[in-house]
Image (tube, rainbow, N blue to C red; front, side, top):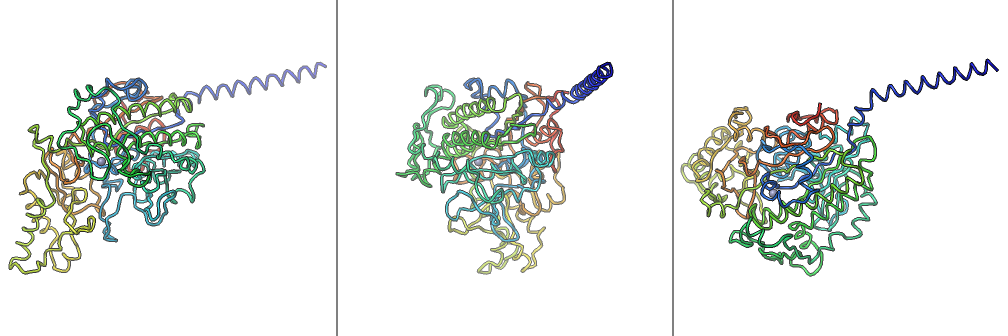
Length: 578
Ligand SMILES: [Zn+2]
C-alpha cells in the first residue's frame, strides 16, 4: 500500500517535471514561432505610380489601399534604380531583390544572340502551354537567373512552403514566383482560360480546370465599363473624358469615352473580346476570383510553413497605355483596383487572418504623361520616331564605311533590323541598338569605333539626352553618382543587352504607336509605392530612400531565411520591430 503510494508519488513528480520542462521549452521558443507569418501576399498593380496614392487617396475605401497605408509601413521615396522601367524587369526585381544586371531580366524581350531571334523574358520552347489555344506559345522562368523569396522559403522548408504566382500577363505571374515555384497562372487571350505550362506540372490542377469550365471571363462579354463615382469628380481631377490624344485602336468596338463597351467589336466571346477584357478593370475582377480559388484549393496559409501568393493586376497598365496617367479612365481603374484589393484582403482575413500574413504592395514601373499632353503644357513632350533616330546614325555609318557611295551600301547591314508585322525595319529593343557581329567580322569593322560613330550620331538627334556604349557599360565605367548612368548599368546584362543604349530627354518618347508609355530613368517612370504590412512591421510613413529591390531582403529578414541569391537591396530596418 505504502509502496504503491510512493510509486504513484514518483509517477506524479515525473509527470509534473515533464509538463514543467515542456512549458519551459515553449516559453523559450513560442515568441519566435508566433512571429512567423503563414502567408506572404505580394500585391502588384502594373503601372501604378506613387502619386496615385496621393491624388486619389481620399476616394479609397477603408479596407483596401487605405488599410495598407494605415496599418502598414509605406515608403514615400521608393524608386526603381534601373532602366528600362518595364514590366518584366520590375517584376523580376521585387522578389529577388536584384537589379536586371543580376536577374538577367533586362526587358520584356531582347535579342537572343545564339538563335538570332527576338525572345520574351519568359519564352521557353521546351515546355507546353496548359489550357491555351492551338499553337499558343508557352512560358517559364528559365531565363530568370536569381532565386526569389519563394524559392528560398521552399529550400528552407524542404519544399513544404507553397509558392504560386497569378496575373493576366505571363511574365508578371512567373517572375515574382520564381524558378522553384509550385505554379504560375496567367490569362490566355486565345482561350479565355487561366493557363500554366508543363514547366510546373503535366496537367492543370482540377480546381483550375473547374474554374475555366465555368467560363468566368465570358460573363463580361458586352459589359459596360462606367465611372464608379459621379462624372463631376472625374472632370475636376482628370479633365475632359476624351481629349485629342486619347486613341482607341480601330476595330476594338470601343470609343475614347465612358461608358466603354467590352466586346472587342465581336459578336461572341473570342480572342478579340479577351483582348479587350485585358484593357478593362473587369480582368482584375477575374484575377481576384482566381486568387480566392487558389487560396482555398491550395490551402495557402493553412499551416506554419509560410506560403507565398503573388497577384499582379495588369489592367491598370493596359488602360494607362491607352489613355495616359491623367485620364478619367486611369482614375477609374485606380479607384476600382482599390476596391479589388479590399476584396482580396478581406478574403485573406477570413481564410488566413491578416495577423498571420505579411502583405507587400508595389508596382513594376510608373508611366509618363502622353507626349502630346506634355507638349501642350509646355513640358517639352514629343515623340522621337525610329526614322528620326536611325536616319542620322545610318548616314554617319555610310560616311565612314562607304565613302565612295557604293550601291548597294556594304555597311547597310551593320545594324540589326527586325521583322515587325511583315516589314523589316529599324527598331530599338529596350532602347538598345544591336550590331550585326557577322557583318562586322566580314568587313573587319572595329566594334569600338562603330560604337563611337553611332553614339556621336545619336547625340545629334533632337530629344536624345544620353547614349551609352556596350564597351562603356562592360568596363563598369558608368558613374554611380550619376543616376542615369547608374540606372543604365543596373539594367545591363552582357549576354543579353545590345550595343548602344539611347536615353531620351524627359517627357520625350522613343515610341510611335502607344498613346502613353514608360521605360525611362525619370521619376514619373521610377517612383512607385512600396508598402509592407504585417507582424513584425511598424506602421507609418517613411521618408528614407527605398526601392522595390528592398522588398525581398526585408521579407527575408522578417521570415528569417537566406535572402535570394542576388539580393542587393537593403533591409528596410526603419520599419522592422526589434
Ligand atoms: Zn506597360
